[in-house]
Structure formats: C-alpha cells, structure tokens
Image (tube, rainbow, N blue to C red; front, side, top):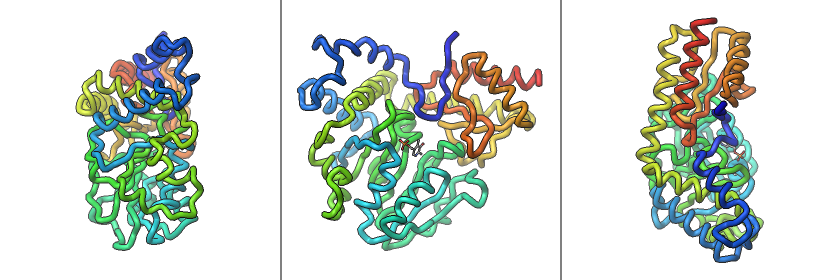
Length: 357
Ligand SMILES: *Cc1c(COP(=O)(O)O)cnc(C)c1O
C-alpha cells in the first residue's frame, strides 16, 4: 500500500528527489563515494553549493543585493541570531500569530525590546491581523512576522510594505508560491518542510543588513561569517545542502513557483471544500481569508471520532495527521511535495467516514 506522509515537519520530500538521492548515495557522479563523504572544499561539493545557490536565486527570484546562506540550528537558532545581529536600535516590532512567533519574541527579549505591533492571541491565533491595525514604530530595527503558522493553520495571503526591514520566518511555506523577495530585509526557513532534511536554515538576507552586526558577536553566530565565506567558514551540513539542491532541480522540472502555487491552490481547495460542505461535521476554526494552504487544521464532532478517524487513516496508509498537541484535532500538512493523489485519497476517506459515523 502506498503511504502518504502528512507530517508537519520533517515532512515528505518529492519521490523523484528521494530516488535520485538513492541512486547517487553510494557513488556520486562516478567518484566512488557519496557526496556526504566528499570534502566540503572539493570541487564536487563546491559545485553542488554554487548550483544550489544559483537555482534558489532563479526559482525564488532572489535579487543580486541579497546573500543566500545555510546556517545550522534550524529556524529556532535564527530567533536568536536575528536580534543578536540586527537589532541595532535596541528594539524591533513583532506580529504574534502563534507558537513560532512567540518563540521568536522570547529570544528577541534577551537582546532588547520586543514590541508587539499586532497579535491574534485574543482569538486563539485563528487569523492574521489586518495590516492597517498594526502599530509599527519608527525606531524599530525591523519588523518580524511568521508567514505561515504551522500549528494554527493560518497564512499571510499577502505581505505589507513596511518602512523598516521586514523579516519573515517562512519555514513552513517558503517557495510554495511566488513572493517579491525585494519586499523583505530577510527571509529564513528551517529546511524540513518545503526544502529538504532538518537541521539547517536557509537564510536570504539583504547585504546592507549584514553590515549591522556588532563586533562582539561570536564568529559562528554572525551573518557576515556565512556571507563572506559562502557558507564555508566551517564544515557546513553538506548532505542537507545537496538535498536542497535536488529539491530545487525538482521545482524547476515541474515549472517553478507559478506551477507549484497552482498545485498547492488545487490541493488546499479540495480539502477546504470538503470541510465547508460537511454541514459542520468537519470544522476549520480559521478565518477564511487567513487559511493556510500548507497546514489544514480541522476538528470532528468529538475527540472519540477524531481518534477513530485517525486510526482509519493510518490503516489506509495516511500518516502524520494528528494535530499539534497544543491544539488537538487533525492537521493535514500538504507541502509542495504532497501529490494531488494524496489529498484526493484523504478527502475521499473524509467523505466515507462522515457517511458512516
Ligand atoms: C518548524 C518551524 C520552526 C522550527 O524549525 P526548527 O528547524 O525546528 O528550528 C520555526 N518556525 C516555523 C514557522 C516552523 O514551521
């Protein structure tokens, strides 16, 4: 039976990517060893790194005045590195849309003032606050947002133009749709949702921001260490970068972000249609204009039915659908790599279950 993996992260990767990695695992391009066994200074790995960077630039439309680097420690390390490096006025604005935003705020408070410009905590994080209601401050070093809220199932449908640099944690929706990178000062993402294996963050940062870093920051926590050495100051996570490279090639092969967005829209529409046409049997708590196309959260009439449905899903090869422990219910994570067939099978099981229960 084919298994469809709906885990929130680490998440599934495209099967084409997994097969290619498997083919090359023991013998990368006739070298007789795997790419993760190559020196990070060897031309073979240099080539992987350069090609991956070039493909990210092309697929995501990253302008020349931005650097692309890979930093270990996932997105969570960035929660601390951002204020450490970039909070040069002693304060920054934050929009609190859930657990991950809150964690970013917690770290920023260690370095200065974390001002809450807007929040949706007042309604259990079920919406993205309207831009016109944000209370941004003139002397903030930057404005920090979480573009997709993996746990609560909300997502920015568009982005505001801000006076101070906009910094977005795009861990769970990076490269799921075209965005105008030039609207941001920095974009970062833990790799394990849309890009590759866990353990590193992709950081795209405007060059002038890198220059803000104070001198007394440890070398490995400075953005300039990564930008000045093309992510090769020390040994980078070579295998993770190689896998991101394969994912970029896959993205190009399916037509880039315009096509990927179409596929993601189609998958999300299938699921939300079934939820909305279930006479309240399936309930999505999120305001319609804030619904995530990556993480679709829903509840059934009782926790007993949720447990029963999860069991039935498991028996049908549908895994990873249990909602985050802090919100309960179910969550279907339908990142770029989830094929339409996986979502079609899920909605058909939802319809069957509803009829019989
Ligand atoms: C998964 C996730 C993180 C955490 O990423 P790590 O790599 O585990 O640190 C942060 N922000 C968002 C939005 C996420 O979805």
